[in-house]
Image 1 (cartoon, rainbow, N blue to C red):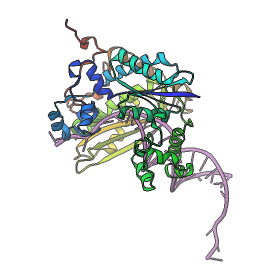
Image 2: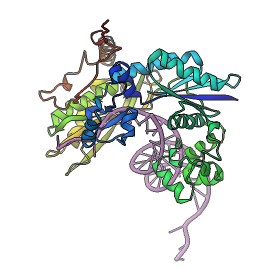
Image 3: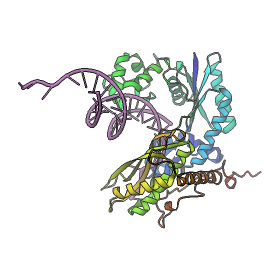
Image 4: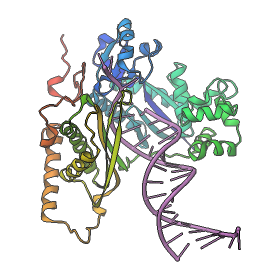
Length: 418
DNA sequence: TCTGGGGTCCTAGGACCC
DNA sequence: TCTGGGGTCCTAGGACCC
């Protein structure tokens, strides 16, 4: 037997901003999505004020002003780097560690250790090393650890074990919808059957759960009962699909401007594909207007290559053709994207019988490699495909208030005055 | 005026095969 | 009028997560 520990950064993006702006320690903070579209992270004050995750910014702007909140644009570079720092810090506590998301890590430790003390140590050390507050939850399965961390958060204890639920007391007060793995739809289904709380859930017969929620829901159920169904995934698996999509800074009506944006998506996706050493058999391209505007439209087209590829120009060429057949004049497009799927390791690919690898392919592959190396060293976009530039580049995102890249750019280092 | 982006797994149903 | 049975593979869509 062993314990799973979940370390979860509190209000992660908002906390990252606060680390470098100690003057904002007590100021409400909101962080917006790409294009400053909606609120995706909130400091505790903003949560307490009732501003919801995912709320459209234009709808809550006044309320945020009233709160005196500081509002930041999305600063992925900063958050990703802070996330790495937390991960590095956590490595000292166990070699069995999984980075579950940008703000969460699972650790596995043997039950010989005093897990309660360890959890406290983790919390203290992460804060010392990074200035980021974290919650720590533990249990004998991942789901138990996750629920415990949820409890730690809501009860403001910061550290909690699943046994703290003392099912007869607290289990009665936890809504089924708060269970990790039970989403909105399943919550409705369960409540219709009178299963309304965590305690109801774990005392329901197994086959009922299986019938209502199928395999994934059954796993959640077993995990809550202490039967592990998910192990740690310490080694990041290569992606099975790669999506790159983005809303435009402003609406676009012209095909060539949309292609510029789409080209950007393709360059990014192909870059990530090559980075994991894979090639893709299929590419799906999509464009759409805002679903909230009238008239609206959305279309997608998929192409399957006879030989899988990671070559940006080849993908671009195919995408251009697809776009031509999808684009309809007269619509105000708001977003484009590309999905690469049926992904296999590049080394595993057989040459196509009738299209053996040509000298041209080798040359272009070498070129891609060079471009990637330069962009890694000097920053994304140092070398770009010419089709991503367009005399009208209003498709590019709008960010009103992005904070400095304090930790990754010499020019943007914080300055300390004594 | 203004509503994110990136993933995974599972199931049902159709196509197809013998 | 009567119209098999069993299997695999693929895809679209649903549900979940952060």
